[in-house]
Length: 127
Length: 331
Image (cartoon, rainbow over all chains, first blue to last red):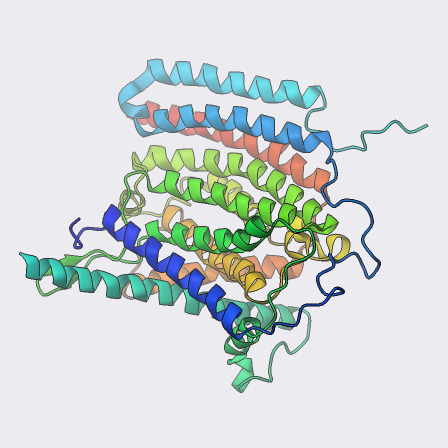
């Protein structure tokens, strides 16, 4: 709790100040802003025509794949992070083990690459 | 005892207020610098009506945004719609808290560190917040009940999580050199030479992926104006749009700050005071980003993903292995 140290207390105080600033801007905008709602104004923008259909459409599968790949590689990245701090003390055996791990990662990346997981072509078949 | 605590508390409040004001002020004038510099690159004048050389333009912008109507489109998910811009702005501000602004000041015989907080996991904190920033983009796009918004939000989310991997992996060699996640330790480790000299590959990977993270040209597909109007913030108006905007420019500052402390030696430099050096470095990085924006065209989506997954990630992984092997061989 010492205010002289740049610790968590300082961070909490800073967070409170940032949130207060953002809230004050939104409050000012709500207070001073124009308020003339109308049907036309609150319609979602679609180049001037009346919006057709739902805006929460189904999105292409590759986006979902990217999210899955991200999860896998990010967790594996976390292992590398922990090793990076102590790589010198851990020495040669750890280097060999981590090299094996990283090469395995690269092989995995190469595998999804070869299977078209990273391709962004049109997914429908052209006649 | 109580008195020293109170004095320290007041001093801390002043320090934090100065940091926050500095961020806001420089971010506001970064908008002016960007518009002016971009205009010069395109042989235009840029803003020149409000004040001398348009210097009052940021103030005019704030007044205008505050007094505009805050519209919520029909069918929007109101709670998420209202909170998304605040998420973007808040995470951007919080990321700056781990950047050391200079060497310790001494006041009344007490040391005052010029940093908001020195976390021993400083770098991981930055990653965590930059991941949280994705929520602002994805939720803002999804909640606004607009097709452009949703497309922008999905693109933004996929792009940001893809580039998060090379962003994180490119910094592992830096952690190996400094042997710590704390950004203060990393700056101290660069007292003799900046890390850009020993890690040029990591520097290039980091700069490219950080530019993709901040969604600026040539990586501005989530808000590509000639295909998606304005992407995830199409439906936003007034101060909520302003918060997205502010978040982007604070992010530029954060990016400049992080590049400076990790690769360019932080506040280390001859002659000038330490915080002046850091400011110069941040501004140089920001000017570089504006210059890139004025020079390069936008990438296509498959090119964007190809660079991220097929080039940056393998190169970053190999760079880790090479750094570790050389480090162990030397010692």
